[in-house]
Image 1 (cartoon, rainbow, N blue to C red):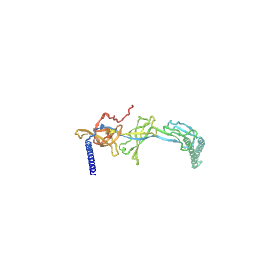
Image 2: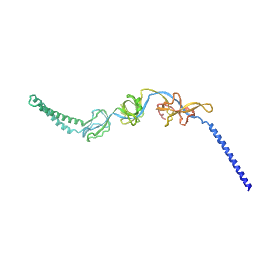
Image 3: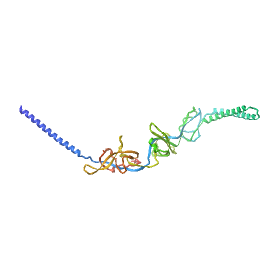
Image 4: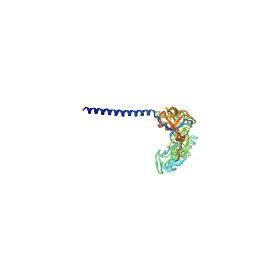
Length: 378
């Protein structure tokens, strides 16, 4: 019995010794790994770089606009009547005063003949009353009554002439007429539309700018107008009107520019992109737009600096710096604050960096940076 107890005690001591040995080995391994981790230096990240360049830009403000006709109305019938003649085709150009539609005037013309006869009789009676009055054979009241009847007859005839004239619907100005909305023989009511008439040479473009733009916005400033309908085409115009009030909901001010449209390609209602150019050049600092890191708490870039590493040797490191960005054109973006001309920034690869990270510049991999990039046809 005692022999068996001693045996179990020996086995237990042996197990404890084995476990202690394993723990010691593992402790030595973990310690060496921690020591190696502390001394480990990650390899430099490959990035491309670009210098902060000083330049001069002509400031411009971009906006989305809508084309509006220089003059535009819906031509309609002022008086009711049946259509007897339609003198225009849809989509044609018409001159001011051209007759578009004639309504039936047979009733008014018959009434006019009777009114002219009444006018002629009233004129003769008035002339006789004048002669009789010279001989004192009638009273002044008789002469006045004859004159009044003559003027009433004139007015009745003139009213019928005006009615007949109004039943000839004419173009109020030069312009291009839209799809007609009437047909021969149709009976029109008062105010019924005939067709839309638009004058589009020149044409207006209306757009909105933030209220901050009022500091540099002036009547006469040049504008460039583009539309996706005609890619690559540009129309040049000038600011003609700046609204006198700012929209309280959006804090934007409405602006109207006048644009020549001799070829008539711009149509009212089209969507356009508008660029408003300032007359003077302003100094700016430029970096590639790919260098900027956009974040809700602020935009930043990585600036390249020379520092001594853990081994005492000089190495290139990237330090994050917050900046305020301005206008963007093509592959470039303006920096308002945070950088100086001549500093080097990481132009690509910044997404994988942290502040103080060692980097290796490989500008042979850098893409071409341009203010007016043009895609290449492959």
